[in-house]
Amino acid sequence: MNKRLNIGGTSLFEAHRQAVQNVRTEGRRCVNEGACLAVLAVGLDRQGEIAASAGPDAAEETFGQLLRAVKVHCGRDRDHVVRLSSDTIIAICPKPLPAGARHIAAQIREAAEQIPPLADGCPVTVSIGIATAAPVGEEAAEELLTRAERSLETARGSGGNRIIGAAPSP
Image (cartoon, rainbow, N blue to C red; front, side, top):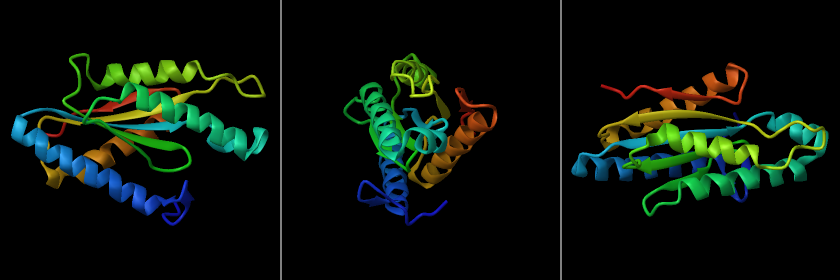
């Protein structure tokens, strides 16, 4: 992946750095509170195909709708949503609600199903990777983010339109 690619004026390197910093900050808070931290990596399936068939503007519009849906479902005061690339969003959710990170992921996936179908008639689908830890210190922040991204890649590699959750680290 080209870490220098610019997405909306922010480089991928800067977006990743921001995500790690947000996880570290919330990790510290969660340790102090004895609370759980969840990281969701949300990926738009078939983004390359969308851009190739419908054009880059249509792909960006579709991704923008997905980004808005993630912000709606991860919109509590301490939640952070970071656009990581042209097809991936990171959501950092400290102290997830009792329903948990898997429920948030299911809501995001359901919201993606409401995005209008593409010109070729194919529905918009997302893959979501989840990593949780209870509690996580700032030193484990990057590992938690990495586990969420790995889970996303596993979901995509399994055909997409899936939610895969990584078990909490010991």
